[in-house]
Each structure stands twice: as structure tokens, then as C-alpha cells.
Image (tube, rainbow, N blue to C red; front, side, top):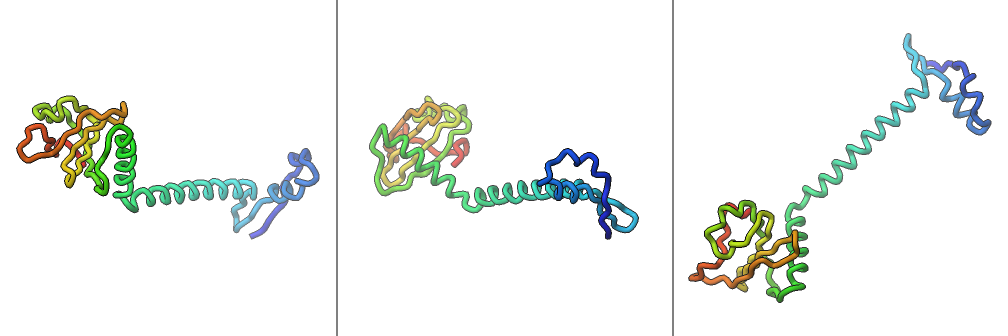
Length: 163
């Protein structure tokens, strides 16, 4: 392994403070019968460092998102209850169940879901026996009802609604 100087005519334009760096980058690293420019090795090292940094950062962010999948659901429930709480009183001391309408065509026969659209959120409070259909795109409550065992308007959470 040996360092050889190369022609420094190109670096003559650099200021004297950068001359040491320019001289070092102008050298070549010789390993056996192969010769490598220090400048090219430095640039290749920077590229590898940048790619490794992006990969590590991406894995870190992905790992944080996957570490607790319930945290995202709880955050969405808090956001929805805050939005709905501006318009109506919500049951206190109870965590609602959350479902999302994914196929409104399959819900056409149920009165509660008559005006439902895909993407609407359904909050069900089982202890308080309340159900609220909320449309996040417009920020409006579409339907609200009390859950009873003999009511035909009570929502049924079915496979078309994904929790």
C-alpha cells in the first residue's frame, strides 16, 4: 500500500488554506498492481455513508410505527372523539370501539347506514349503548342512535365495516 502524488496543476487555483486538502485529494492509493484516487475513494465513502444513514433512519421510523399498532388506533379515536365532542356530549369514562365503513353498498338495507359513505367512522359506546356515524372528510356527524336490543335502526358491525 503506497500513496503517490499526481499532477497538481488543476488544484493550483485553490486558495492556500485548502492546499493541504487539495494535495491529499490529488494523491493515489496503490495496493498491489491497482491504483485508486483518494478523491474517488473519499466520494465513494460519502455515498456509502449517505445510503447507510438513509437505510438506518428508514428502519428506525418503520420500527417506531410497527412497535405498537394499537397506539395509532388510540390516537385516531382521541382525534375523532375530540372532533365529535365539539358537537355533542359523549359518554364519559368509556373507550369507544372504532370501525370504518369500507363498502357502503352492503349496508344499504340498514336504516342507520342509509347516508353512509366509504371512509365514514363508526364509534360505538357499548356501556352507554350509543353509536355515532361520523364523516371525517366533512367533519359532520351523519347519524347518532341509542343501541337497544329490539331497535331496527341500531347498527350492526358486519364484515363490510373494518375495525
